[in-house]
Image: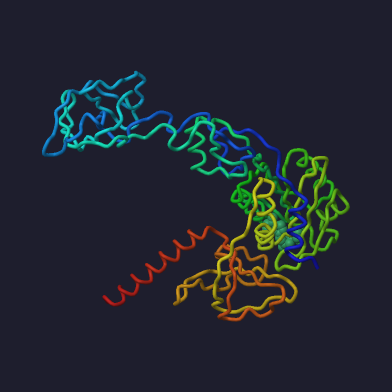
Length: 430
Ligand code: AMP
Ligand code: MG
């Protein structure tokens, strides 16, 4: 049997980032820059005031303080956005607002708080140092500087510096466009009547959500019958457009109802592999069609789908997007032990709480079956049990792969601790 790491390695080795595209800033969030970006301009673009106050020449106010204030004429106002050119005149000052260009010849700004704030003639009660309250041109970024390196993932702060430098479009590894296909004669999309022997498709909506959570785009979700002709035709169609295709169902033993496996066996570089993991053993992966599109065929059970996604697809989609995904687990103490199959790395759904010592405690949730979506929805994470471990003992340490952002889990733990406290004090009052 192939190990999880071996399978992941062979998947990652087979795929490369999707082609570069130019996108406007508002579409760049989460994408990875393919080129260094340099600024054509200084930031700040011009010397401007950091405060509302009066633009002065520091030397002219030497000796001024609260005991020896000086009254000086005000030449006028310079608001932010002022396009007129202003020049300092000896013995006078300009009133200036935050962000407004400092007049030529002025070298400091006296804060309005250090004056009586009047508009025509102002009483100044503090002598500034040269440079006080002035934001010099280029103090942050110099024209010609690289502001962002290729390989940077664009987040909100990166969008801010690009916008500030007047960059409207950037070259990035394109958004990864993913097609999600659920297979099975028994499936009915949510919202439609479910007949005898039928079930709602839960993998499709879950995979679509997972793909989005991984920063990729879902361009199509569909569900297909266990019909080889239909599956082949639909796949061929999507292979012309998609950057990746994810199917679920129809791959278990290659029996007559395992239509996905039947259609794809021998196609492209497709390989069906038994991976030493639980759940998620039957994994199919290959590059298909002229465009050599990565196709992932996942097993049908919802828990297997989720685990397969976290273990193989999240890293694979990151790679397609020009990134590296390194899963981060948190250490936890097993609150109630369970068993694990010999020779398979187990991903066990757990709920996290805080034990007396402040560490995470992991408790199994939702029963062992891979079909149990109700329990799945209660899990905070997947406890990762190495292949050689068969008995996960109460009190032992286990790494947990969170299924939702840690800050969300933390917030829930804090609010449930608060509820416990108020329950206790209610009890005391009664
Ligand atoms: P299969 O691998 O096609 O034999 O499916 C294994 C199990 O997963 C069966 O119980 C299927 O009904 C169930 N299953 C397959 N696809 C889905 C889906 N999209 N949503 C919910 N359950 C599914
Ligand atoms: Mg099926």
